[in-house]
Length: 81
Image (cartoon, rainbow, N blue to C red; front, side, top):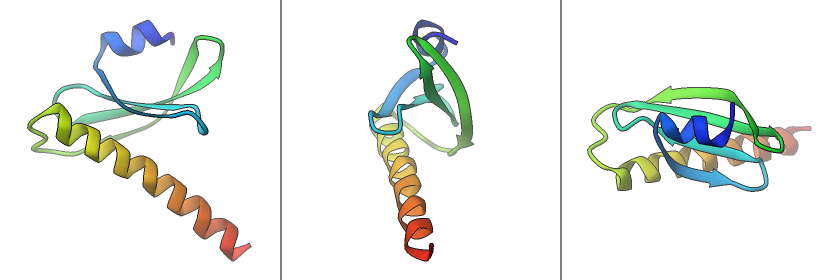
């Protein structure tokens, strides 16, 4: 899927350059996570829901926490190895 297709279905509320990920909020409860696989081609890698999100600022905070959790998981994995 292209970037243009992705933003047609929602709002980019977080992005991470190192992991090449975008978190897109649909304006309601759903957050889709996309990963850049080549040039302008993205693959959906996760989806999660958070209810009672009232605005884009809250959606941005939720998406940033989701990305931070991925980093925490990577650190925990590498510490255990």
